[in-house]
Image (cartoon, rainbow, N blue to C red; front, side):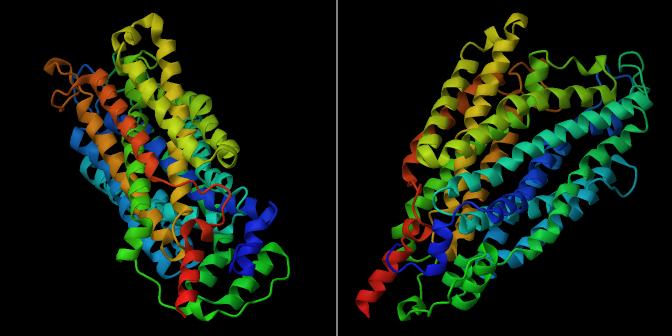
Length: 524
């Protein structure tokens, strides 16, 4: 037992893996399931919304969302998430993890359902409603990042803590898969019931009026799994680390954990040095002890998300470019949803999900640091391998090679920095700042995601004015965009060296909370 470590915290650290660990993973992971489901589905839905609400009579191609509308629909959720990460991260340290945890879930469920409703039938009112509720959906999802990571990290034992936190994050993989499968099923049912000719045969008839229900049903379904876990969220006791180290209520901490772990734990007296006033987040002591760590977690998450989201949101464009998805005019509206969903689900099954679970399997064996370094390294290699001979990959006979390299980039993002940047901030900071610092790091990531998603949207446009998408200025092309992303990954590799390795240590040992106690003891 570490010097001065409270008995209740030591009991959590050395506990064998039990049933309560798995319930915590499911309950904490459902927020990420909804998050991934929603982000995944919106990219399918935008194509359909373009056909339904922005159809232009006599146009050769089906209607698409104008750039500013497309940016708003995708962007408001990001802005909401970023705000939620900062706000709920701070609130989780102020009020406690449990109190705030039910709020975020409720917000997500209500806004998921509401984003499928719209006031009025005009494009403007439909888009405004969608954007409004997607902002608040993002706000709830944002709160889930710091709270789920912190709760899981504070409940876990030190031997398998990394795997447990990574497993919560890996629920995103199932969210993506569920989004894909549900979209495939929904579009197939609608397609069978309301068949329509391709756009080039009958521009108006290719989008059946019933398609307006399809996108709403797909968006609303994401609320269901989260709603099912609401009851268990409200029943989870506050984490012992918050109760003991932040609220300083030893008796309650011992009582809660005795119930959770089904062992008898005695309440300890709060020692005099534990009652001393601690330094604040903006103090010199925090900057000296944890400043570089916070810079490390925030910068690596930022750089990763620039690369990750620029690929993820625009998968469908890459698939179209290599011919996996036929030209829009050769399909009717529901067929297009089906084809895009199928292609994205294949990528999820083959590379995204295995990547997450590789991290779960190896994170406590080879450590967070190594996984993050190796991940950034291979992402760089594969980005350059896609970019430098880019013309080679656009040829019909080389398409499969392109998809394989593209999948490998995803695999090493998930068996790499996408998972580790989520795990580490929940381990290396003191309990009273843990949720806030995780919120700051993840908000920095979302800022990167916004740059990745929107920067790439403009950057990847063809330099040739005649080949750009409707409404966009010329960009630098996909090849140069991929080169830029390669450089971003190199920077991620370098900034990883600022982050310490928390593998196998207790949370108090990593965050230096023991040392603080020792220093204070010497002063007394």
